[in-house]
Image 1 (cartoon, rainbow, N blue to C red):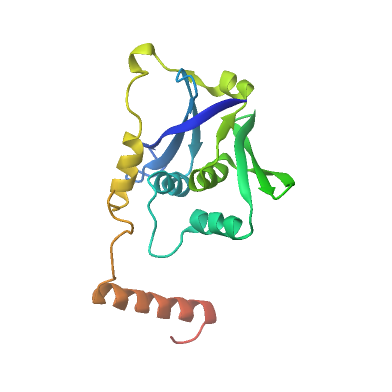
Image 2: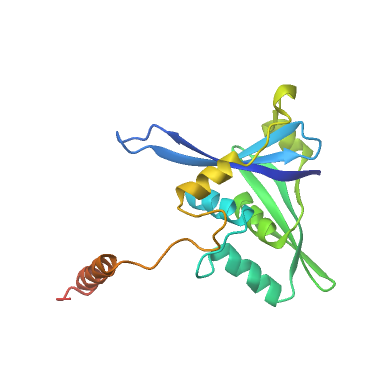
Length: 197
């Protein structure tokens, strides 16, 4: 296993099936300890955004999924010894989360995006199998090896409307937004239950 760090999470848009609706992808860039290779792992928007938020240490007014999960593990006395991107089958990456509670150790199968999001929040080390790095990794040209990473993360955070300094995203809904929420709720009740809302 090779120790890796999350160098960046990058958002990319490509042409979608419908004009005007681009397909959005996020790519997690894992950098090997030597700083010579990067392992790109493509994930969905929700996973990419959750990881970017965790990397910047931001939190919402209410706990988001991975923050909640890490607090559950902590409350149960469980630590994450390590996360490993263990294999690549076809174009699908497989990860393992190594959990410890006292003297009991368990390894849990996970999607890399989920495992990485938890590792970030719990401060756990991350590893990638040499075979995975050899098959799917990319060499970093020497002239780029000193380039600072994290620009993609900052772009994602900015696009979500989060401030680097703020611990929370904005805001209380406006009265107009609350009225819209109430109307939507009424329409949903009428739709689901078939009656007047």
